[in-house]
Image 1 (cartoon, rainbow, N blue to C red):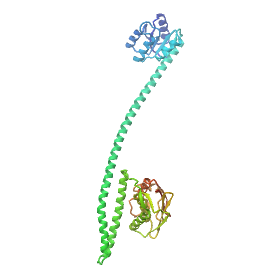
Image 2 (cartoon, one colour):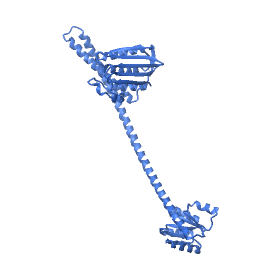
Image 3 (cartoon, helix red, strand yellow):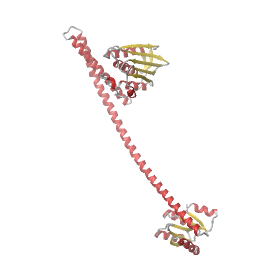
Image 4 (tube, one colour):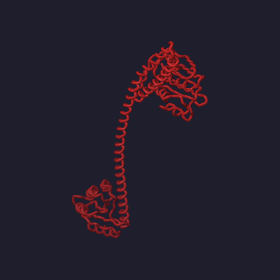
Length: 391
């Protein structure tokens, strides 16, 4: 049993004396006896109490209930009510003040001792719970502030990244466009050299050879710049689907002519065109990027004498294109990275490339709301299949 400092508030001297003796018998210290609410508040203003035993019916302006309300507000000391009444009206009055306990007169010492222990236990647990709630509220407040600050910093970082990406995109687009003009001039000059070399000239063979190299190098560099420009637009979210009517036969011929003109090996392209309409409605630039890159890759990674099969079919308002080769294939372990930007498989050897082609294909497929799939291994080559909705 722990010793408590207890204030008795009782206007009946006999009841106060009996209560004092009962409490002192249980080794509690009596801080004082007050016969009114006003006197009780004066004692509490100068002394610390662990508990107040409060008679409900006190004489004067402050009865036990009003006095308890003031004690709860100012001193936060547990109060145990004393009353000879246990009627519903009295109980309803005391409930609102959240008393620690309620003792009916007359009482015995054992019951009184149990009530006091329970009251102190209840008060301590409530204060522990309140302390935990306060700590939790403070932690929530701190965490909320931390999250707010982190979110603010993240927003700043994202805004900065957006500005950097916009600047990068502008630089890429401007620089790439800047290269296009001189490259066009170089290509024209190389083609003129080949024309001049057709005439009788002592260095005819050398001029033709080197002008051909220049032309191929310019075409490769131009393709690279086109890829860079494409991703510059992609990063700036400027790739739009622009459908228009197009002649499918002329489109296929343009793709095949471009791939044939740029190939540097002896690989044949076999074309299978099935049920193709004369005119379709789609984005010709995006379609061109898809089929030109797929065919160029198949040709580039095939060996001399091998054949690339290009099948294009129209089924249920879809263009279904299949490109099949017997080239070096794609290692199974690396196939998950196939459409990553700048990715090149480890088995490409000395074959030049930027690693952008299939990334461009995938981006165009997504814009056109199509699908792409492939099968590949290093023994049997690769097959790409695309399905693209058209009108």
